[in-house]
Image 1: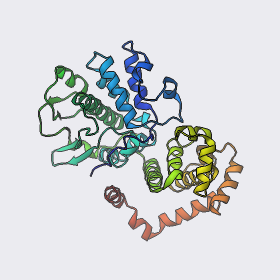
Image 2 (image 1 turned 90 degrees about the horizontal axis):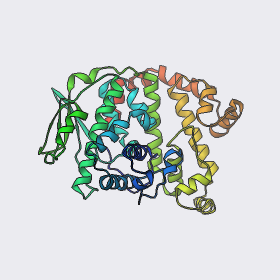
Image 3 (image 1 turned 60 degrees about the vertical axis):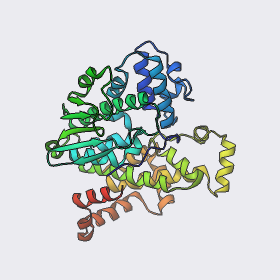
Image 4 (image 1 turned 135 degrees about the horizontal axis):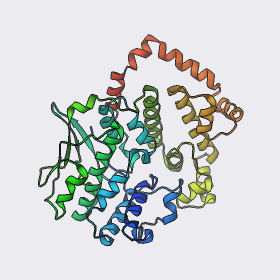
Length: 369
């Protein structure tokens, strides 16, 4: 089961990885502007929730880090900063899964939400659960850059599993497809396992026995909410065509923090006037797309959580619940309570229940990749 390849040039991701890299280099006395040189990203963008960056921009910052830093531990230290809570909805989906097996499965399924620098896979064997990295950063021509990125990625994977498990879960072994670098001794300091080089492929092995372990934040309703939201909204964004699809994807990156038209236009490198004109050509308006995002999120939360209508209204950007209820009826022709009652009838229906067992959901998740 493999994730889709990263879209290296598309500006889809909040700059959380860039922020971690900049902070690591700042500790070494390197200015943010030097780290970001040639990326098109400014230091102030790193704290702007409306800014989106691309895989290619992050790769350029890593090239800068290789040039600027003499500290071989830099990629490991960056990876150590990237806890799952920095990843938004993707991270919450992984942390609320019902088992560590869910963590592996969902980590692949929704990997495009994680500003991915490579393709990942996971495999389950009788005695091991294993991350594999099949494409070895094929977009990075420099062997030095590829090594930097995989050192960071391995550290992230170790940190992420510990975030989910809530305790120290160490790999059994880390395999690397390249020769041992001069700083090979520090690998075990960060990965906490035996590290072997010159292997046929890069792999990170764990004891299979951990897969049935229940994470401390596991919760069926929370897990369902984040999985359904990730799946439904990302699928819809990917399926959308033209400029409207790009805008939809920008808007759903941070539910509850919706950028305005001027900010979206700036993200798309155009003026708001050009954005308005191009949307008119698609017979749409910015407000219609924003309404669709509000509607999609509200319906997902109503169907997959027990949150109050007031709380859902706040999550989708309404401070006044009366305005939210009025808008919801305009979007759907129903009230939030009517949607909830319909959902309750579906879940108690024998036919519905037979299709939505945990086992069938797992199969559906696997088959949709």
